[in-house]
Image (cartoon, rainbow, N blue to C red):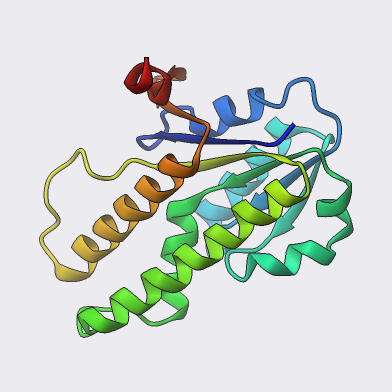
Length: 189
């Protein structure tokens, strides 16, 4: 069944666990891990996520150029896809594209367009192959305004990307203290 679900919330709100529970009755699952294990803390988080998920999941570590999944056997064979997470993917894009305080607004805009196209390609790829997909992201716009330009641009870009995915999604779930509240249903209902 083709369906797109966005799970959003704050740090440690239970987003990933909620997203994984959506696939309780699925066997062939693909986990798209957007993180890069760059330090001990990230390595620990990755290990804990893998242990929690168990053996039902195949994992692909990728944070850009999602169209390359079309030829991936794990993608072809899976029934459900979980991408975790958009804001980590965005952090990697900022880091590897060397985005910083001196990056021009045009460069920010170009990067955002590339990322939105990449996410759109993934959503369309999943739909065209009849896959159910859950995307996890962080809700960053509920705190204070960041003091530096790069962090404001990161927050703003993440917010616009989240809005795009929410618009495309069949369901949007807000995670709060491990409890998921279906938002899009509330808005439309």
